[in-house]
Length: 333
Ligand code: NAD
Ligand code: WQD
Image (tube, rainbow, N blue to C red; front, top):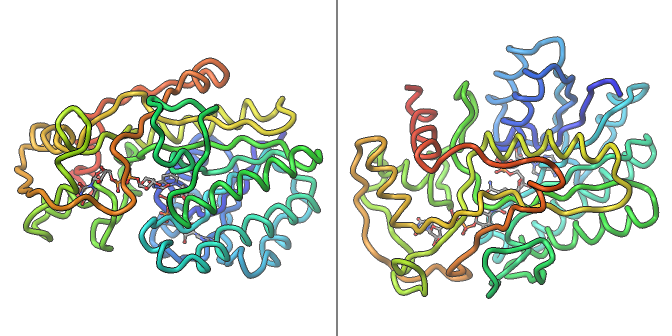
């Protein structure tokens, strides 16, 4: 293979961080993004730093793959890494068609192109949301799959599509089920945008730290958890991205479909992450309790032993690193 990758969603938080790291490691990348949930600043920074190894295509994969098709002609690829997708759970409940069209059709279009081009190795950005409200914690990959939102339904459907294509011998697939990615890579070039009314906890903590919001609302204090607030498995973006490079190695010899959890295996409550953020950054985060957020589950954390055993992957970064790096990236400290 010639160390060349196709990366969809390369302008986003995870796809951008992955692309930056891949280029730093010597991969060549053809990246594609529609900017439906991002802007050109990240790809401009990546293109400036790696002018010879990075080609960017602006294209909505749910509408067309023509430009991507032209750019990949005559090139052999190690794999396609499919990050592109819409990801806001709440929005997906109000606009299910937008999510099904964008996430599902972009995936079928991409698969058709990869099939025509004989790119067989496929890494997919799935989510812990496919496990729904699991009573069994920590969660193994063999757990029941269950949708709790239209967004979750699209991830489950794309996994099914990939399983069908793998069974037919069209692709070999690793589906990486991310838990709660936070933090920023060492170069601090790419991070979640706290200015764009985020839904996730860490960028909302950052908004309070930046004085953009007066208080953080903690959604529920009466869950059956250690302190009544929701328990999640936060994972540093560096560890998450590293899991993709392990997957690229593993998929080389894989025939079929495999899913892997990417999480630390540690559950952390909302109160614990706030306290950690306050301590490591020395910034108080004003907060008050609010009603439970509709669709939220009490607990969701990974059993990552399959990724450890088969991919040789494990996390290295602590919750302290996650809180420090999330803040440092925004402040550029
Ligand atoms: P993001 O929104 O920052 O990045 C996704 C990128 O995909 C954006 O730049 C967007 O413009 C692009 N995109 C979306 N639809 C497209 C289309 N049809 N054609 C071309 N580009 C398109 O999100 P992220 O946090 O980087 O997430 C990346 C992937 O990981 C997504 O598939 C998401 O569902 C999944 N995921 C994210 C999380 C998380 O908490 N961030 C957790 C689990 C899974
Ligand atoms: C974490 C905890 C909230 C904001 C979502 C998606 C999931 C995946 C990751 C893509 C929960 C609490 C949050 C706030 C709060 N994304 N919270 N106040 O809900 O685990 O997962 O993102 O696949 O699919 O559902 O992450 O960061 O939104 O919430 O109290 O202002 O923080 O209730 O307990 P979640 P989150």
